[in-house]
Length: 338
Ligand SMILES: NC(=O)c1ccc[n+]([C@@H]2O[C@H](COP(=O)([O-])OP(=O)(O)OC[C@H]3O[C@@H](n4cnc5c(N)ncnc54)[C@H](O)[C@@H]3O)[C@@H](O)[C@H]2O)c1
Image 1: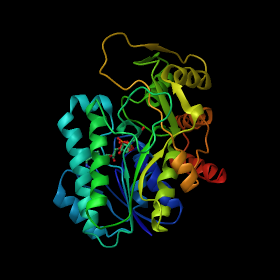
Image 2 (image 1 turned 45 degrees about the vertical axis):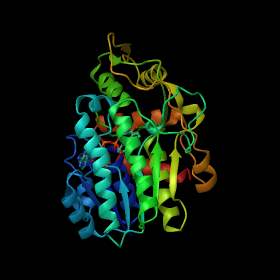
Image 3 (image 1 turned 60 degrees about the vertical axis):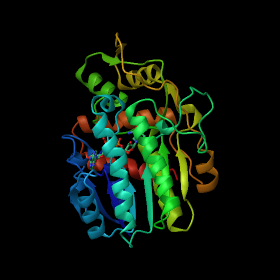
Image 4 (image 1 turned 30 degrees about the vertical axis):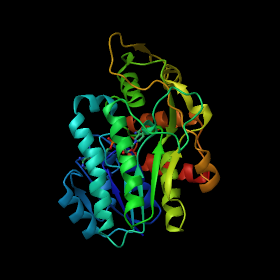
């Protein structure tokens, strides 16, 4: 099978490309340049790929050229501007990348007869947020107050409309939670920010210690995407899916920081940033019952283990271990839990 991952130079895309390659598949990727020092570079993902393309998803002609010439069997669309705070600074780029970029991928896939399945990645933030304790289910209304959330809700609705309006490859839309894991170097994400501060021996700064998020290990989330593509290839799996963490993973930012600090060791500490901050949703919870019952998917890593695996990866690599070896070992350990 030939898999195309858009956004393969990013955090999730690098793990997904590595995992697909470990499973013996042919893998190609389409994205912008990797962030220096990120997982893509550290694990030399480029060397595993048949096509390693730098294509801007906002450029319809280039996306169409790339996808029709690669002629993949399965497409995972992950490429996006994925950060809430960045979306306030660059709203136009966020909407163009996340909405028009998704349209360009959908159109290009429709013109590529080899594609037998596509998984469009959106997010838990697509739901109209009413600060509800019970998790959102797939049929709940979509919304989005900040530009990132709105752009992903638009991409989600666009994909649903596309599937209903035009014949084409079986399609799943996957809504995941906040993922954590080794090798994330994105600015403005909690675990990378915390671990960088802890490693430098300076107190970490936190914006919303009381905000509750559904934390999930990146491999649990990607396992959901992989199970969706397998189901699509088997003639099932279409529609929208919550691929969210278990109830034990709905934890406040402050509690994550405390756990990470105690697992990291002495001298790790954090404080709250004082001052006005851009709006971010306070409580976000997903109900993944549908994926559990219909796909047989479940989270294999509990919250505490997810944080520990993330810190183990970081400490091993900071200590000089080869990131590709550490990552492959975590993939093997994860597979062994199945
Ligand atoms: N990380 C999370 O916690 C999380 C949670 C829910 C959903 N998601 C979604 O998962 C996907 C991957 O997120 P990530 O955490 O790996 O982000 P990331 O920032 O690490 O990677 C983003 C990828 O998209 C690519 N990209 C960005 N703009 C592009 C453009 N204009 N043209 C082509 N490629 C472009 C980047 O080059 C990179 O490969 C995104 O769709 C994101 O919205 C992430």
